[in-house]
Amino acid sequence: MVRVRRLDALHPVVVSFGRIEGGQAFNVIADHVRLLGTVRCLDLELHAQLPGWIEDTVKALCEGHGGEARVRYRCISPPVHNDPALTELVADAATALLGRAQVRWLEQPSLGAEDFAELQRDTPGTMFRLGVAGPGGCPPLHNCGFNPDEDCIAVGVQVLTASLLQWIEARRP
Image (cartoon, rainbow, N blue to C red):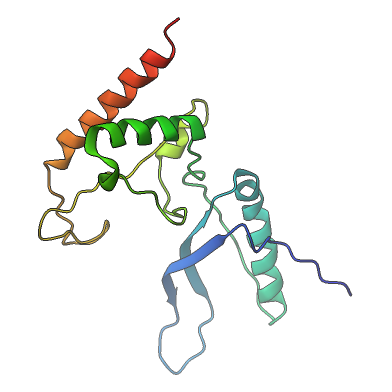
């Protein structure tokens, strides 16, 4: 039997289980287990194929060990796709406003899920990160200690305003 790779190693997919429930006692094999988690990737076509791939894989794994599985896959949001031209425009506007040292490019794409992707289904857009750490730093998102420096809001408004004005100017005849 020839096995074919189902996922491209150059297109990352992250499957994370954040909740595992099952069993009634530590010394009794559970009659059922429930896993809840997230799936993240960067490629829109691959994102559309993942529900079927995951269901097939989970069912085959369970059946191979004498079990069965029910898979319920709910898509919360597709991957964010930043329009390259708009991304460059925002970066240029931010650099002109704040200076090159204050504008940093992510070394690797983020696999964070974001509902902003829903807005990008029909309209080109770009998403950028706004530094929110004050002099004392700032714990990451989804942390009970997250407390951003609210002065960053004014900086974000300035960057977006400069970007919009640059976009308008580029379209003038």
